[in-house]
Image 1 (cartoon, one colour):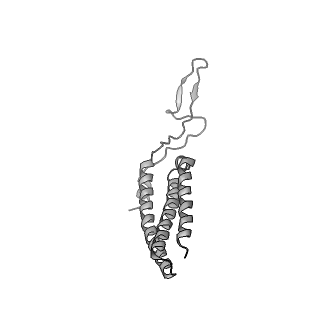
Image 2 (cartoon, helix red, strand yellow):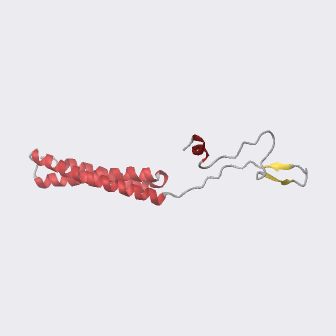
Image 3 (tube, one colour):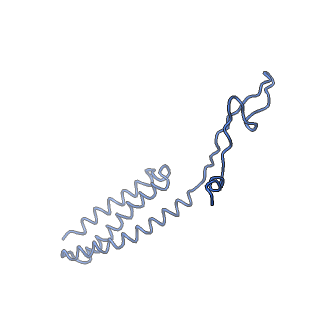
Amino acid sequence: MTQQAKDNAGFTLPAPVEGQQAPAAAATPATPATGTPETVESLPVTTDVDTSSRDALIGGGVLLVLFIAFFFAKNAYANTLVAKRIQPGNANAAGWWLFIFLASLSTGVVLAAINAPKFMAPLIIGPLTLIGLIALVLMLLSSRK
């Protein structure tokens, strides 16, 4: 394939207008008062594509992967506490509190990444922050001897 064939494939822009000539599509009919044509500059049309469902699906997939990773982190943390002579029941509870803390933190971050103006509202971020802080305190209290 030659270089010219590669260059000609696809979309091409129209040639630029030189001087005071306006393209035929941008010109309006003559105004009744002056009899001269007015030119209207056309702005590029941008379409607002609604990607909220796609973004939510991607965010849900990211959260699922993170929750699986947090579950393994919970088990590793609980096993580490048992090795430090913490009772298995308390170590397991501390692991679950760690999971809840990490899940609430990551949920807030993913929601902010999906649509910050919508999900950074105090009624959404406030409870997630409160749950995360309570889980952090309970995790630290459960991991004591």
